[in-house]
Structures are given as C-alpha cells and as structure tokens.
Image 1: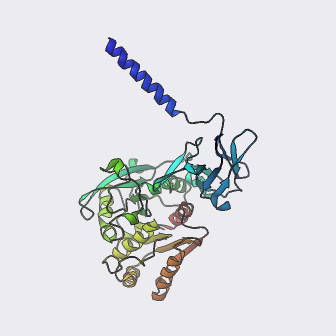
Image 2 (image 1 turned 45 degrees about the vertical axis):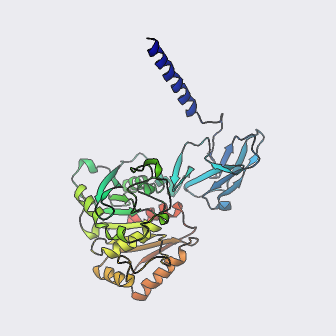
Image 3 (image 1 turned 180 degrees about the vertical axis):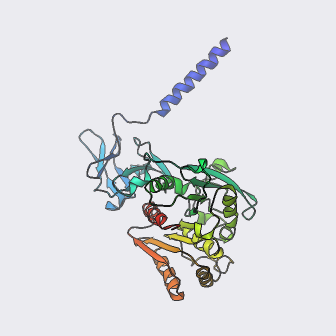
Length: 389
C-alpha cells in the first residue's frame, strides 16, 4: 500500500509539472492582432529586453519591424496594410530568434519553425478550412527498387467522396523544393485546403494529388525515418543524391504504385506533374524522360540553373532533343511561372529562350516578389483550374 501511494504521488507530481509546461500565454496579451485595415499588430512581453524585432515574409518594409515599448510596458509593432495571404514570422529579442510566445499556430520550413497568420479577403481564404466537403490525406509507403531497395513515403490527397464511390480520378503529382519533403506542400502549401475549397466552388476537376519525397537518399521527412531524430532537416543540395537523375528516371515506380492502389484514370491526358524550385527541375525531367505519361507540366520558380550540374547524365542529356520528343508526343499545357525578384528568374528566362529557338510551346506567368511560398501557393491556385480540361 505504501509503494502504491508513493507511485500515485509521483504521478501526480509529473502531471502537475506537465500542466505547468502547457501554459504559454503571457497574461491577457493577444498577438498578432489582425486590424480592420489589414495592418497587423504584434505585442511582446519582454520587460528586460533592450531590442525586440519582427522578422516576417511580407513585402512591406521587407518584412522587418522594430518594436517599440508602449505605455503598458509591452513591445509593440504594427505593419503596413498587407494583401491577402498566409504569412510567417519570427520574433528576435536581443539577437535571439524565436516564435511569438502568444501565437500557438506554427509551421516548419526546412529546419526552422515560424509563427503564422492569415489576412483574409483574397487568396488566403482558400488556405483555410471552410464548411465544404472535405477530402482525405493519407501518408503511404511504397517500395523502391531504384532508390536504395527500401520503402519510401509519400502523401496522397483524395477528394471528398472518394471512399464511398467507384469513380476514377485524374492525378496531379506535386513536387517540393530543396529542403522540403512529402509534408511541404501539405503544411506550407496548404494543398489539402486549397483542393477542398476549389473543388467545392466547381473551379477545378476533382483529382488525386500525390506529393512524394523528392530527396532520393532519404525515405521520408525528418523524424519519420528509421534515423528518427538523428536526421535533421537540411537542404537537398547538401545530400549525396542531389540531381543525379535517378529520381526522375525511376518515377515510374511512383506512378505504378498510385495506379495500383488508387482509382486513377491511367491515361497521359489525365496526369499532370508540377513542382516548385528543385521540384520544378524534377518535373521538367520527369516529363521529358516519360513523354508518354503526362499531358500537363507545371514549372513553378523552377530550379533551372544547370551551371553546376552534370548535364551528360542520361536523365539530363540532350535536353533540346527530349523537348522536341515531348512535343512530338503531344501535350495540353506546359506552364512556367516565376517571380521577377526570384534568384532563378534569369534561368527561367534562358530556358524559355531555348524553348523559343526550337519552337517548343509553353504558357508563361510572371508575378512579383521572389522565391517564396506566397508565390507557390498562388501558382497552385492558378494552375489547377487549367488541368484536365
């Protein structure tokens, strides 16, 4: 009995400690505050700090805000009016960067975690949950002979009603950038919410969206492999298997797995491949190495800088010849999008010059700003209504 009492007392102490750890709010502070004019106010309680700053991904003031102490002794900063989007930010207190302590909503991008908020009244409305029929997100493991003879993980979105019906669907293969993984388009791209909302409005064809892991030497996202926490997030260009061509050449494995497991329409006119940055590079060469598989291709701020790559590798060799062969096979849409401030902007212009020289047809969309998720989410909103028409 004494031993049981001691054990119960220990459990109570642990529970009490856990409850104390749960608390994170600082008094009655709310941050951020979305004002009626779409300005955003941040408030931080850091009484001993000498300097507090906001570091965000909005365009106004390049996302920088120097906070000032208000009459209540709290640090405060208000942005300029912001257009509708999902925004991420962090707080820097005396040179130490962290999250907004009163904002529980966060997301991970590569190895950093950010606080987030939405400005409604535009594209951000599609990134949030509404009272519409909801699709499902499944994380699947498939076996890859080509990439290390092991299981690899991918994320699959199926539209509302998929489980109850027998209808077959077109498929969009949506690829992430360097530093991303099979979670990137779900968490940062808000793909599931975008698809639910666009389908509910009748703006896009109901489709399956497959989001694979494009890091050929890694099975899954950090923390989801047998390496567990020993594998920390990193940029893909720091990995050994970066742009060797084996991922692009072996993409048939993913297509065959999806076609065997899901009710897909197994025709090239009902398949699309699109990706951002590194995923745009992958999309290009997946399409060019499998010209009989895709009628729709989307290059979103594509990583088309080939200066430091071995373009003699089989997957990349004779790009112009592969483009001509892809055009000969026929396709419905080859869509290129890039921001004018993107560091890959000139590379995309150079690629389009190559296309022009050989008469390869494409559609180009140019936006403002640079290599950011705000552009890629908006590109997804623009691209998907053009698919499978």
